[in-house]
Picture 1 (tube, rainbow, N blue to C red):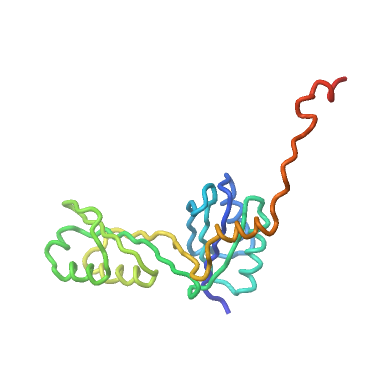
Picture 2 (picture 1 turned 60 degrees about the vertical axis):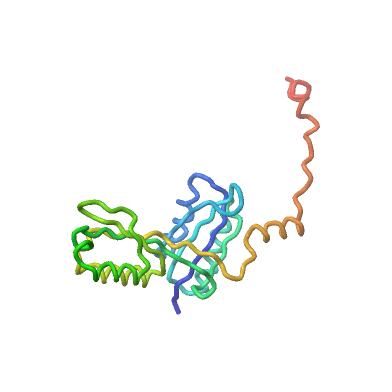
Length: 195
């Protein structure tokens, strides 16, 4: 049975990687509901957070396929119960509606929204929460002249993980990289490559 999964991918920051990962989904005709990329807690490692609706077997295969990309360090998948997540939403409404109607102010307080910009012609509010919460505020603001709405992609943290940083250290201690050996012919180019 299909359900919502969040795929977390740790990668090197390379040009073209986002395109190659997106192609993996489009070839299988899987729609990406949400996509966020950002730096991670590890210097020079980026994190992709991808949300899809699919069956678990397909999600497992997707993660294995994503991990085949050279720049990908690790890909995880989780259900909504296994992660903590939020989305940011911005709402633009006419300022005169907000100023005149106390109901709107109470409504915004109820949803935990705060003013980001207040101008003569419009006011922008922001709130964070799950998709259902941000969509509920859209419906509540529509009668007051909602001008514009935008929502960010999901940001998520895996509940049970000790963090990828620890896993990377653990992996390195179990399978340390080979010692770097200096090429003995590096400074003897003229002697080795003569005609």
